Amino acid sequence: MGLGCDGYEERNLEIIVNSLKKPSWDRLFHIKDAISLGIPITSIQEATKIDRWFLEQIYDLVKTEREIKKYTLQNIEPSVLRIAKEKGFSDFQIAHVMGNCTEDEVFDKRTALGIRRVYKMVDTCSAEFESPTNYFYSTFDGENESIVTDKKKVVVLGAGPNRIGQGIEFDYCCVHGLIASKEMDYEAIMINCNPETVSTDFDMANKLYFEPVFWEHLIEIIELEKPEGVIVQLGGQTALKLAEKLHKRGIKIIGTAFPDMDLAEDRGSFSDLLKELGIPYPEYGVADNAYEAVEIANRVGYPVLVRPSYVLGGQGMKIVINDEDLQKAVIELQGDLPDNKILIDHFLDRAEESESDSICDGEDVHILGMMEHIEPAGIHSGDSSAVLPPFSFSQTVLDQMEEYTIKIAHALNIRGLLNIQFAVKNEKVYVIEANPRGSRTVPFICKAYEVPYVNIATKIMLGTHKLKDFDIVKKPKGYAIKKPVFSFNKFPNVNKELGPEMKSTGEAIYFVEDLKDPYFRELYKEKSMYLSK
Image (cartoon, rainbow, N blue to C red):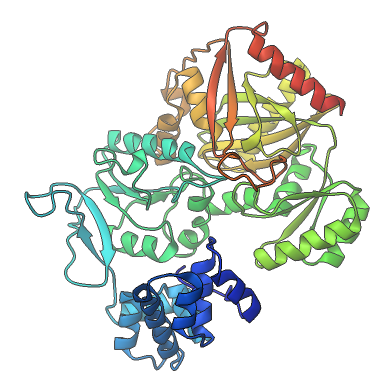
């Protein structure tokens, strides 16, 4: 959202002073907080050893913030609003500083005043030669260089920065989404802020906006380009989170509709759907506070999994075994994610975990693949080794997973991709969650079976094809094993224990011809060891 002004400002002087003395990810924010509290720049410079020029720039932002505070949205001077935008204040920050309006109201006010972004072409030739690339960045200065065509367009939302919980797998999905859109004669527009990804290569999209995957940047591009719709399924949870705002603005979401996505993402509503469909799931309850959470946990039985809705990479998820730990977990979640509902699930101890990826066109469902996890349920799927296809599940278990995948795909009116997580205990399959989007494992399956599933899914989302239009031929190479990649050697002080919150930074693929392979036999020993603990 920007430098501070977001509800997370630090006011404890002792914490701020200690933070200034040591470099950390949040020191820059605390420098801004220190200046806001009146700590002299000279003192901050002595503590941080940061050049005074940079500190003066932050001080200038604090002065602008103080100027904004003098106004309400109704009486703010247009020049003050324009200066705030030129200095990088987001609409959310301006609303937070004034305190009497919302982000959307600030957006509507400034656009009515003509304070809009314009787009400049990235000059890849440093003005030495004419630059033919359709790369653009936004600014509030000068004329717009982004020429809008009259072609039918589609916007593909990227995943933003690569980080734990979301990485290059989603960029793979975006690339194939762009290719499929262009094959269907759409002008494919990419929005992503990461220049180190393939989706932002010069020959991927017809038009690329190097912009944060953030609401006010997205809506201004949409109002300029006027696309047929926006694809949110391929950019991971970051893109999916913007679906609600798109829906409220009446902007078409290509593929699965927002109400159906929301049904899958809202853990309580999704569990109610599973109950209607007769699909087993762990006992659960939805809590608003620690007191309610303890009541639910005692009803469903410990251990319980505590998790919020709409989060990335298992953020904030914990397994707890008593009332005291549960209360602490809920209070922490409410501090970090105040607007999220908290779901309390009974944790299926010593259960095996599996997942499926599928495509639905509204009539037929095609299962890309089902994977068996090596680590037990409770380890985040992104941190688990997974084997494609499953190697030890009975046909009864496989049939249940297939049946539930088809039922859920139809119940959620899926148009495009769907990922479902399962827990298997005593030959009974439980559904943990469903993700109405591309998953980390979709590229893994595409490579293992040599099938361009994301291309197929995108054409189904666009409504140009049905599953029956494709002759899908899988080319299995025995078993494909997904191996998570960790970077603990770069973060020596990080807790290395695996759990429901994701810690891996990537994944690799490993092929074995049969179950006699030594590598596979070692994995099988690991699985036996986990289940016997």
